[in-house]
Amino acid sequence: MPIAIVLRDIHQPPAPPWWPPAPGWWLLAGLALAIAAGFVFWRRQRRRRREKIEALFERALAAAASPADEVAAMSELLRRAARRRDPHADRLQGDAWRAFLDEGAAQPLFAGEAGDVLLEGGYRRELDAERAAMLRPLVRMRFLQWMGVR
Image: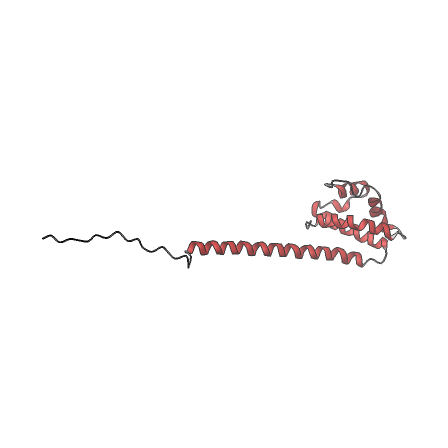
C-alpha cells in the first residue's frame, strides 16, 4: 500500500511591519527635518536683519534735532545704501542723484517736491516738519529696497 503524502500550499512569510521604518525612510525623514530647520533658520535671520536695518533707520531719524537734520540723516542713509548698488553712487549730485534714486521705480518718486526737499532740505535753517514727514516713507521704502530687505 502506497503512502499518501499530504501536500500543503506554500506559505508566504508575514508582511514586514510598518514600524520601525526601513533605514531609507529614516534618512528621508532626517533630510526633510534638516531642510525645514534650515528654512526656519534662514527666515529668522532674514527677519532679524530686516529689524536691525529698520531700527538703524529709525534711530538715525530719532537722533535728528530738527526737520532739516532729519532730512540730512535721510540723505546720508540713502547715500550709504546706494553704495550697495553702485560704489560711486554716493558722489552723484543734483539731477543725476535724483535719476539714480528713481532708477527701477514704476513711478518717479523723487522727481518733484520730494526730490527738492531731499536735495536742499538738509542745508536749510528752517524746514517745515510736514515736508520732512512727507519725505520719510519714500526714503524709508527706497532705503529698505537698496539694503535688500524688501
